[in-house]
Image 1 (cartoon, rainbow, N blue to C red):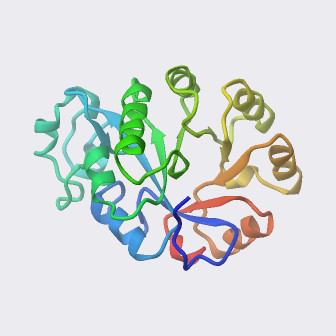
Image 2: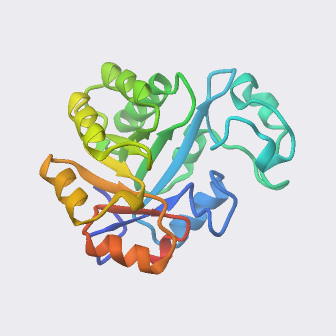
Image 3: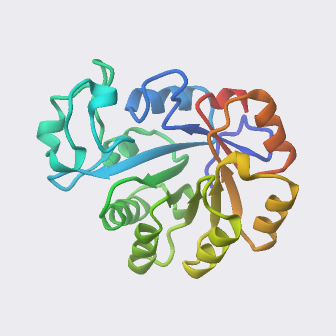
Length: 237
């Protein structure tokens, strides 16, 4: 995997939605900021808009970040160009962002919307085939486990991470991860302790935990030897 050489720890620093703590989330500018901070990886969210492109956005409705209501899945890419995140930034497509990243880096693509698995796998396959990016540069995660099942049916090789919120049992996630041949479990950091970390690792999964912003919590996760920490402030890792 092509990683930033300045990182001297075993736990990867992964910028949450780019570098959300510094620049508006899921924008190209936020991703650039994360790279400037020498992250090992970046986590981003994708929806499929009405014209079929995958766009970076976290909420189904545009209101919170753009001030104007609208469902991201019911608007075309052309229509989405009229909306600005925090009045300033364009909503980028996944292809645009990947093309603009100069050196391959670890990218965690979270499938937020429905019917995102097929388009995501197509883009990843295209980048692996036509550029210096490798499959190992990508991991696809989702809280929507049906979407992950769909991805696995389409592609047997793309690395997959099972997202786990506080309401889901780790055992359930491990069981599902085995079923779809996932590579990682992505738990909320509040679910992690010596026992749960050991259980996940003993079952052969990597651990990428989210969203860890407090320095004490970051240190705790590092002491637990998780594989990656997703943070709004990745430079703290």
